[in-house]
Image 1 (cartoon, rainbow, N blue to C red):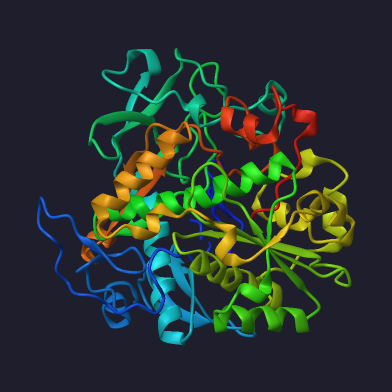
Image 2: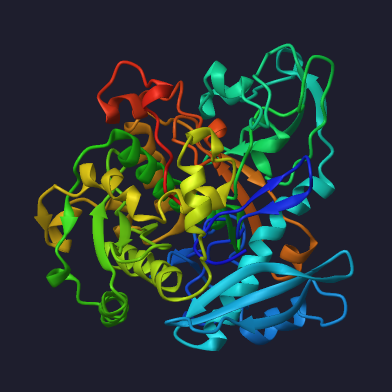
Length: 492
């Protein structure tokens, strides 16, 4: 695992795929790396907490490095057995190494910041976020039933996007077509803002779900998920707010990618944050040009695509990151801060030979790493041309609306987001509680959010759920989205 990327787990083999929520595993922007630890007091029932600049409620739990280290780090038993700085990174980058089956395993969280302490704090928080998916599976007592048999409200998983018949039939596909009569595992979720209960498939809430096939099924699951839309917070509401911002970032990217049209490009002369400017200069010295492309579409939350390209590189031609934040300058900073370690460090090491073998057939793309390798060679250059001919705009003009930036309380932020989503045709947000023992010990809650109608981030060409999504068709300007025209996305 390494920073800047989401996680998926192959439930059939129990193996981690890629560098594992999204940010991310991506160092998420769930908790500001340089924010103070806050207080260890949570507002009581009926109180609408104030939000700080990082959209964190105040007061909040004590998330200082010392507190998190005491809770999580034990060199013998874990869950984190050590914090390891990543060498040759352009900023402080730390990996939280965890224990699996009694021995050291891959990093389960990465953090970056202006200091090693700030990066260590984020690495531990990301480890906590990642553990939510595992905690849900270990504690869940799912109801085994057919969709038609469930009492009360239930989510038809096809509302989260569906696959074409050719995808279901391909050997690399790891899910079954949904049938209302097939027995699946279901868990409760909450409708954000109302608290109403809704049944969702177990695999919708966790990317650690193992197959459980029933008669007539290959896998016993209907979704193959990543860590997209997972986050931490002092309360379920706060965690859901940040999980939703991440989901909207990826939704905006995929709407833009599959639309295949020019988008505005942010003029670098209007970017004034010193850290952002310094990181761009470091990447340019290494031969990379960085474009900042505007992703925001029908949901007015500023979202930015940071695209680095180096025509002289034989193995890292291009790298992609994205970020969303109510403050456009913060969205740019976050996207560039996530991009720089991938460009300048050794956390991404694609193989040109493997990349060229992959590029002979889209169906060869079966996991997260393949998406990066597909675009790691110069032969991928033409894929980016449709997006790069848009107008150049100043940062202040790129996002004329950002209503969420004015949110002063958590309740106000929730109402604003729900209103913006409803205007875009997404009328509900479902919140799956992933909170486990480790989260409660830290005074945190862990969630995954699901937004029917949004474009899901999935890995493997056979798992791209693009059917049944009206917003995607509208963005692409088509009556239907043909599988023949579907391209491999570069999002890591």
